[in-house]
Length: 306
Image (cartoon, rainbow, N blue to C red; front, side, top):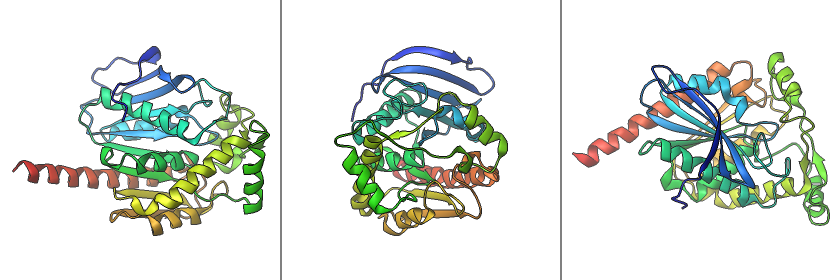
């Protein structure tokens, strides 16, 4: 594990820590030069850290509303723009190796742990970010208090033959643009879709063949690694998701080795559960799950010190 946190290059915006919640935006060294992260802290001492890994057609700025809810729960929230995405440097929407995304998660967590020493850390991944967060977790289970996967992209609505073709294309044509996700399928809230369509950071977002192929490498790794998972896992999916396949979350639930695992399916919800109609229910479920595991962890710590 990298024990030296990435150096902060410069802050873009920040609100001073005072009696109320605070937030900051900054670039750190990492990725393909610079990684952009956002963080939000509660008004009082945080109880735990929630680190967020966004998926495709997304970046850390899409978690403003959710972060406000999480900080109200007493959580310190950290979110990263993966390399080539959001405000981070790198070829747009392109990655050379799946492990490069895992390195970005490590950079995010190094910053979070430096700022919030000793606090339990929960990792939340959305869609493709859920695949990345899960793969990171496989190698870092003892460092995390729990894993949350939202709209997990373990299965996608594409025929196996098409995915095989993309794998082949990634060799001779790695930067060929092959996958565009429709913003209209992310949420049933018109204002959210309108904001996505107007967001310059995801304008014309189309994944390269190598990006898709490397995500498939990550999915293959998870398929083999599911039985080794042992930390608490919460998996959440909307039944009306047209971007990823809800059945993939059931596969996760069925094969994860964790004794403590929960699958929540939300009837008629769309892809981005934290920016969709009914998101208050989703936030409430996450809060209860985190509260339960923080209480369990505190009980174990008390028993050990007794």
